[in-house]
Length: 157
Image (cartoon, rainbow, N blue to C red; front, side, top):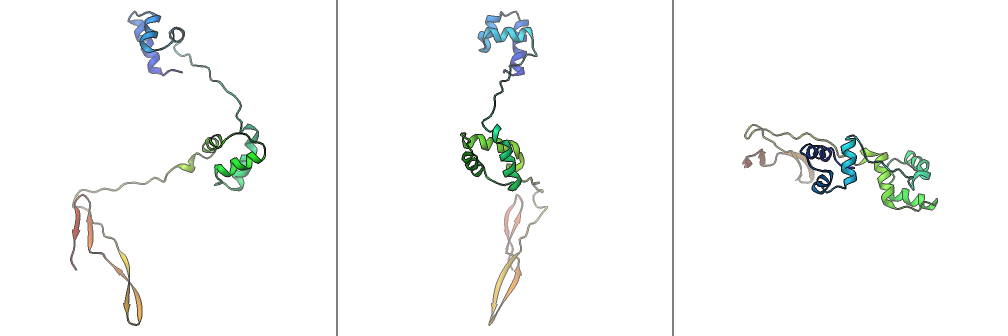
């Protein structure tokens, strides 16, 4: 199927007076395609549908996902091959990405930026100090303070 932009270009060239043969040569299309889109601009290529190798195993895949939603494609493929599936890993992965599309979605975050010198960021740390014979955990502030867009400032203690 060709893009809408190409269909508009076919009609523009036809309005400029070019023949079907010239339009086809210019756009790298067949004359039949050019004539088809000149006759019916809304025409679309017929989609071919054929059965998937996974169709007989859809119920098995659903049962596996109900049992363990995070089961990997490799495990599913191996279990399906034990039941007579002769396809490969790629078709199983493609089907799983359709079934659980959010599995690979990354967590969203909001980036926070401020003008130079407006914000100061300080990280607290935990330090174990030894005071004979005991140890104590002490919260400390490191001597490096980050200022956005300004580099690093050293604050002496």
